[in-house]
Image 1: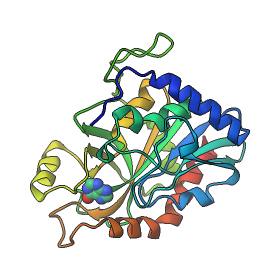
Image 2: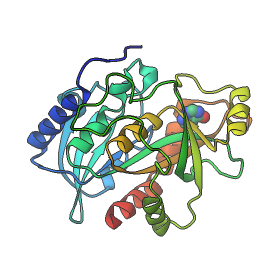
Image 3: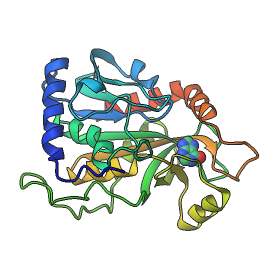
Length: 277
Ligand code: HPA
């Protein structure tokens, strides 16, 4: 796996933000939504579309390779709010460096976003959650073995590393999401390198560690967002019971189907949150 150590990731994010502003005609965005596997449809109904940009046209963004992700940065107006919807994300398991994985979040923050909403598809470890259940993240386990704080210290105009992650997922934003949908449960998301689903033994290990959800994204972007002081909300959609907790064989197509079926509820939730920011 490459590490990208030695390049100025923050400068690359500033370049991408400048190009985004040029291509969308939107000088500053207020909030960004990163769409996880199967969440792509949400990009179509969040608000009034101002402009679309191919992610690959922005400096530092690789083209997404995962089915269910969309190669799109979309600028959307939700009331007075300028929202940036990132329809694709880079994952460690694609062989990307950690700094590439968090480049979307750093770019969104360089573009002005003070709020970052990370969404994902996840396996559920809580047996009471059905497929299609949205869950607010209240904390995370970063089990990827890496962090976006790796490499030389951040430049002088950025906060130092050793980021406080005590309340990484904003209590204020979680309360606001609960306002939109009071039935939402909260859970702890375990983020793994991925590339394969977990074994039943690994799921038992994760249960012992306190995880409620398991997936292959989000945790690194969350650290990068908090490092740069953005307010963070995380939403998982349970697309399957985690390995060994049901008789089902895990399959990416089923994950995408589950996410698509839950689409309208997810759009309503995201829209409701954006409207209340
Ligand atoms: N494990 C890891 N990642 C996932 C899963 C899972 O069960 N479902 C959706 N993404």
